[in-house]
Length: 126
Image (tube, rainbow, N blue to C red; front, side):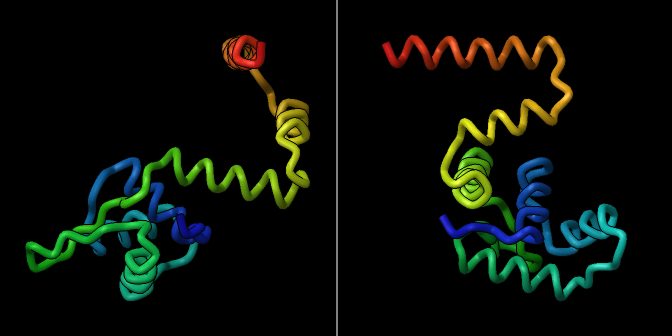
């Protein structure tokens, strides 16, 4: 999978959350989220690049093209996580987890989920 840029991630996030949309719909939503105006043609250009990268698909059956995510959200997350682990933590997932837990305010529910995952991984490694 081609790695999305930050701007492309913003578009993908909208497509993941709200489903297929036109350029106008995406542009309006991006402008609602941004402190500076994003032009329609800029959004269209991003979508064209994302189409070439295989990140989105386009339904051209009507006059206005409707764009949809062509990659799964978990695939995008996994790619980003791999990049962070490699670049910021020299390939150590352990260091990433230690850093994240040390900085985050985790509640009892989150800690229980983390413990359950650790227990599952321990069972898998036996």
